[in-house]
Image (cartoon, rainbow, N blue to C red; front, side):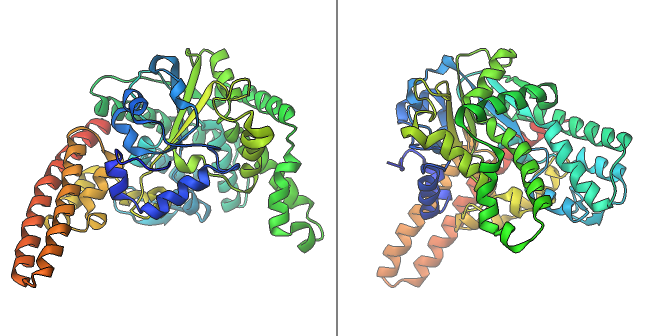
Length: 454
């Protein structure tokens, strides 16, 4: 049910047991894709093309939608998770050298924000499909609030209006670059110009709040109910006598982050239609699978929304709040074991707008690109993460086949007890892998120069 032999790259580049567990968890009542499954291959090829190889799970009934009937939705993360964790410690990382430094002024922070534009943020913003209707949200205001809160705490003072305005302008500047780079990335892999309708949350923020509150009323959801799992799991009221300030912080957290959860509902789609951002009757969210996963409070929200009352409000269920909305969860930029790079790697360790030439130089090491263990072959890992399409995709599949032939030949040679033949086989395999790696590297270079061009 959760396996397709057509997903050649996904099946050969990720831990299959971990992949199975992720799919099972996403399908649970609070998993974000209740009763989800893989779409059938015919629909997938007609609608997703090569992007089908990235699909982790899709909402049920997705095949009911025809290619011209829906818009694909997504959105940008202004700051990578690893970077947010560093900001909380007062640290910014040089995007080229990786050198860490304590930021002492708002100007230093803003200069960094305008440079911190990584390829994983671009790729994971919105998924590619065979149609032309894309709409994505830039959460400039929500990120402004989050960053200001972090900086206030680190500086032990409140930023003034001038400083806050500088932060907002820096976020807006970087988001404009990210959105343009995303259009260029989609244009590169599709071979034609792509335009994304950009929604700025700051332009519709009060509408988002009103629609979120209306949805909560309909589902009988309150901030207190959503906060309860966090309170119980931490025994806050038992451990701390005066817990009112902690509860208030949690309520504030729910108030803001529930706006993001709301963006995965039919109410959000209705708002986008009313404002003219979406022209089609239906929409499909195509985003990384982790965006469908849940923390404690989000889990409670999704359980109520998607699976209560026998799933009447699940995605693409007639008569429910999400009847016009579908969801396709995709693979992320990560390693073999699904460790996401935006969490585990510094921005200098992944291709970004400033370091991509240096990054490509690191990939060109002959020894690295010849490695037979593909999960440790840095060119193969870069290819499956950043460009599993077109000519690059063909080279990646060739690398998989070369590796498979090697394993088969190695087994036969071992059975014959011929060590010299094993050495010759290994040398030949490394040479073949290097040939394909050079193709992958060439395509990655073409793509990055196109996406990050001045």
